[in-house]
Image (cartoon, rainbow, N blue to C red; front, side, top):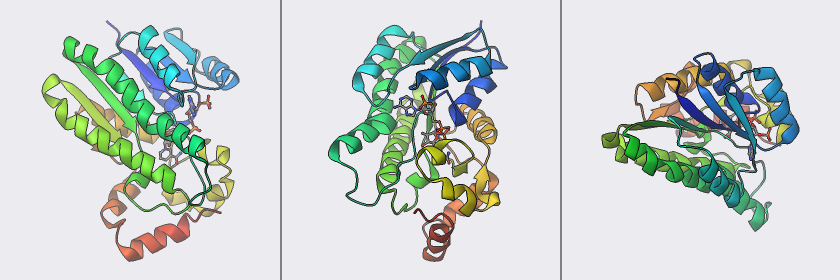
Length: 250
Ligand SMILES: NC(=O)c1ccc[n+]([C@@H]2O[C@H](COP(=O)([O-])OP(=O)(O)OC[C@H]3O[C@@H](n4cnc5c(N)ncnc54)[C@H](OP(=O)(O)O)[C@@H]3O)[C@@H](O)[C@H]2O)c1
């Protein structure tokens, strides 16, 4: 029997490629994103009869509650929806901060915890969380983003260990720069020119490596060989200086 996945942030980038990847294997898909028009476009592009498309603002608690109440427990959750947040310290107002935290951390936890009891009853399940390499290194002018991604990374790592005996795997993916719409949407177009080519990974590669790691029950994956190589050095001063120069935000 075909398996069933819920993917958040499925209208573009990594989430869309995840949906495409699983569609080739015959999965049933519940695909969630926020913007009606982009959802429709992704539906036309994916053109896959085993997919249901849902429109929710995942920065709101009632959306998560509604999803849990209306969509049956899946075999795989891909918690991917998110946006790049750019801004110097103190720039965002408290409501914005709360909203972003819920979208990429609190809401992800609520979504997972809404389904985990059923997964435990079933005796199986997989959870994939798309965090960021920014969870592990300083990101000046994106400190909120970095802290949110660090929070969800820590949560994922912890429940990965906690759920091992329940036959539920939890994998946190920590991508570096991925060629998607994220930077343009955040007004960071200049990064597409400034960040050198070798630092970009394609969303297809992120999905391939993340899915492989999840199937192997790995708790963490850093997609792309460049990032695997530099990760141990990212918190050394010279490496951090070089990283900052290459990725400076305007
Ligand atoms: N691109 C990178 O360099 C990079 C690096 C590390 C980690 N990541 C992470 O990867 C994940 C996917 O990003 P991406 O790069 O693939 O960006 P993307 O192409 O902009 O896709 C983002 C997806 O998230 C959805 N989304 C955003 N806000 C939402 C909301 N409030 N409610 C529901 N859905 C929402 C978008 O839906 P709509 O189209 O409806 O807005 C879209 O489907 C994010 O969590 C991001 O932080 C990206």
